Amino acid sequence: MACDARTLRIELTPAPRLQLAVWVEGPEGRFATVALTRATAYRGIGNRPGASQMNSGFLWGRGRRERVLPRWAHQRLAHGGAPFPRVISNGFREGFYGVPRTADPYFCFEWVVERTRRENLGASICAETSVAEKGRVMTVPDFTARYAEPYVDSAGEARWRRLAPRSPYPPRRDLVVASERDHPDVARFRPLADDAMPELDAVTIATPRADVAAEVEWRAPTGWPAGTYSVFVEAHQEGDYGGAWTEESLPTPTEPAGAWDYWALMYGYPFRGQPSVVYRVDVEIGRVGEARSALPVGRTGWFDADGALHPSDDLVDDPGHAPGSGADRLRAGVRGRNRLVASVVCE
Image (cartoon, rainbow, N blue to C red; front, side, top):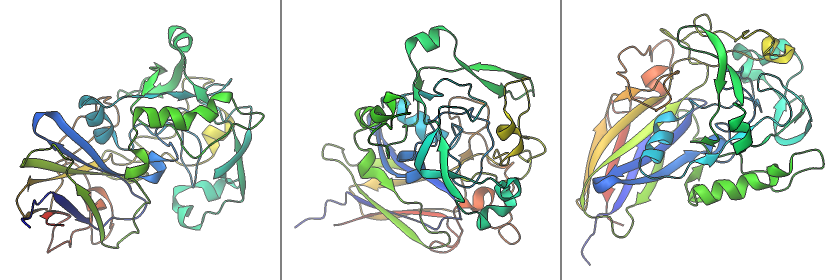
């Protein structure tokens, strides 16, 4: 039997604590998500209650991480993917940890301030189950009333940032029912996410083990013609300080005045280190072959809302002294000094 060469094998070695998106773009606007790590695809870290610049911490359950994988998220929308309903706080402001609070089956909270700092992530434990509100779906009346979150812009000016009723990220999908004190919308998060992106279950993967070679396989759908396709991998790591992105240059927000509660100001760490990094290789579907890349094609930004790519030459990475930072989020060493390898094979 002749080989149709439509199976793609993607090889990489991730650094610790990565969120990853893998996708393929092709002729005539074709787009397919190949893999999306669980915290984004299943736990909903990109679309949940809490201001987007709120501090982070070990298994933090609040603060929408809208810059986790922005290139993937916005390319998906640009290729016709449906947006997701936005999740907002239920009855309290976005800069507060808020009420009503209910037990959370996954996220947790550490009550000792020092153990919530970035340098203690490796020693963090879930001292007890998180008790926090899980939010509700934003409505048209919310938007009309100019529902907003506290936000510090690229010029350092604090303001209230208006939120749109749709998000490029799925809400959490690990909650099946709403508890007595949850908003009823909690039970709708999963079906609403699946309606917008039915393939979520199929593409969700566990975070790959750090410094262990990983493979992802994908087969081009029936109807996709032979030709040149681009394979992308986007990698994000919270608190990857370096260059222009440090805890000093992007500190814990304290303004607008009265927008943040004690927990938001005193607990956790400012997570906005170096932005996500994007890698790309081009392959020929229909022809057995291999493509390799040693360098990223760009990085995203912290303040642009369109997932635009910027040159990556301002990233700080030092594999010898600070492994896993910047471009080194995918380790060099796949088939030589490469960080990403994609092969078209026969199956």
